[in-house]
Length: 422
Ligand code: AMP
Ligand code: GLY
Image 1 (cartoon, rainbow, N blue to C red):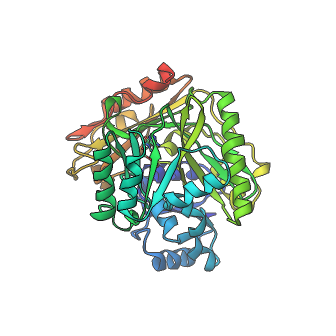
Image 2 (image 1 turned 90 degrees about the vertical axis):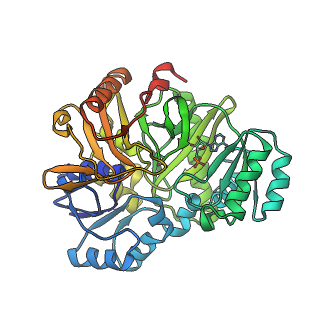
């Protein structure tokens, strides 16, 4: 089969790495890809927003399957377009992906179908929003309705901070049209957990759990980022809590789709907080997480292609994937300054030293001959597996210590919470 992956991050490198191992994949392409992906797939210089060019490429090359990485491609309707053209593509349609691209839509879906989530209000007037915020206790959470690269969520410690956040989102339009409406939400306490489940419309297939580290600095300090590191599984999601997630989140999600007439086929990745009164959904993502995918796929023994095809064909019930026992840890090495401004073009040293001990998934890199240069905020996802979390973590950090580039920044506490069990 000929497979095309859309995107250019570490998630897409992990998808490419795993799909390249499928005996049924004989040609692999990635648009636009990155330095690391170019080692295993043919990178095509088409941006994910260029739908006409992507369709023309897929038709010319007779691509059998296209796999979408990022949320904005789904929100822009790439899946609908490919389907209209008679091309097979993995991911939910634009209407279904609204569960990620509109927080108001997602919260109303959860409320309608009894999926546990934080209490909330939503507003399209900043004045009304400010009035409601005053009636809430602090801290409270202010969220732009639309996609804002993970930056549209502000935890306000005081009512004044909430006012400022509402003004920034709705009046100053810091995130553009994503700020047409806001969601105000109660602040939830507890460990975070990323759940991934393939959904084929009538069945779901749960992947192992993972935990991301969203803040830029150790001890969850600093700004929110796309994610600074992950580990899997998370001991905090006990078998009892996992069963609650199945019945209260995934089964209600499926029956909600049916009663609302939403056709959802693709990956569903709910972000959860495990509160003392049970797991609550923070948000739905309609795609693979980044960097959750790096740890999940490093643990998947089975053929990913089979799983993706079964999702598209409504045959997930027949799939029983095998996962490596033990753990995986991914530490993101980022450009100094990320998620604010940073420099690029720095040579990356030491990759060959870790080729045997770690999987290095590239995010913001480009290749020049046989060398790699930084080209983005998140640069590498250094990933290792092991028989237990401590071993996987030691291996990942050992590999990180062998790799360098000017002003490289990484957190030193990835997976520490998993070892402490909180
Ligand atoms: P989201 O994009 O909705 O997942 O929010 C980004 C991050 O903000 C989450 O990963 C949490 O760390 C935090 N967050 C969002 N909503 C809440 C909430 N209701 N209570 C506590 N933290 C939250
Ligand atoms: N790692 C969080 C996300 O992909 O949204």
